[in-house]
Length: 68
Image (tube, rainbow, N blue to C red; front, side, top):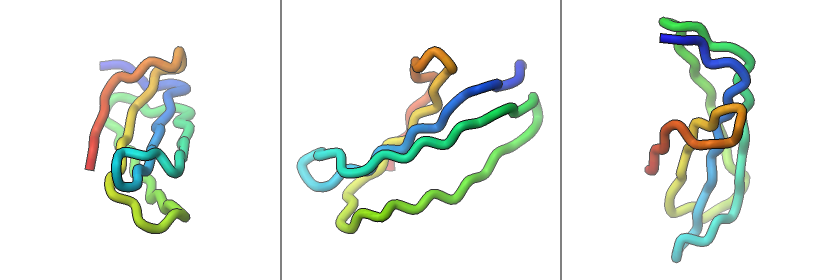
C-alpha cells in the first residue's frame, strides 16, 4: 500500500449517443493507506445518460475507471 499524492478524479457526463457534455475534476492532495475519500459531485447539465469516472495518476494516466 502507498499514499495517493496529487492524484485526480475525472468525471465525464455523457448524453445519448455517447456525446460528452460536461467534465468535472477533483484534485486529491493526499490519501494515506487505510484512509477513505468521499466527494459529492453535481453536474449542471440535464439529460445525462451515463457518467464515467477515472482515477488519474499525477502523470495523467488512468489507474481505474468506473461507469454508471
